[in-house]
Image 1 (cartoon, rainbow, N blue to C red):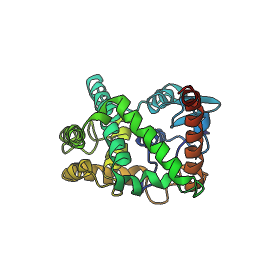
Image 2: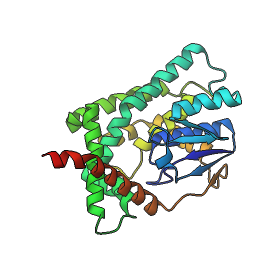
Image 3: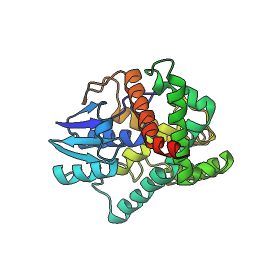
Image 4: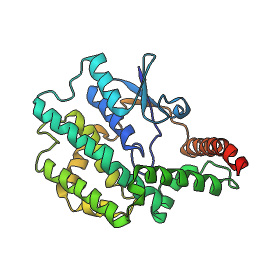
Length: 270
């Protein structure tokens, strides 16, 4: 059986990471039995989630997971669609994954209220005296990563403007179609749904969410995908998650200790 390594349900989503959601939906689309595990972060091949263990073969990155499923099980996630349509779907996925994602992350981690209602909850398992330190250190690490990307130096209005264009473009592309390319789901719908659900998550108050809510077709699309892939009582995945508080607290402490280890030589040299 395939094992999918995840963070686990949080903030009203199957997973706080849209990439983990994408991987899980691909497994559901493939109709393959799988189980989820939440204790694999430190063993992740790329240091990130998701990754899968398919009969002893580890595959990291949601796009590579898709390729593995296609090769290993002979699955065509885009069956019935032309080469041009498949290429178009790939470009939409990259717009969301390589552009919109960073705006979502920025809104979650840099806006104080959103941080309190979302990412700050990941640290509930940290010992109370250490919790503020761990929370600040991890948040600073995320902000620095956004700056390295370039987006972290932009104003909130500039970030929102770019994200709004992504959302408007997606809504225009979807139009009145039930799924991204037409009447049946394609592999790209795993990505589209993961990102639309993340943007519409009611936990976060953002201009990106406000704009997305203006597009009725995006909301109907999201509801359609929820019903199809996460129906009430869904038992397709065998889940054995670690409690959220313990899991995120453990990961946060580990991250802070690792940062301290790396910075120690530099501090001595000053």
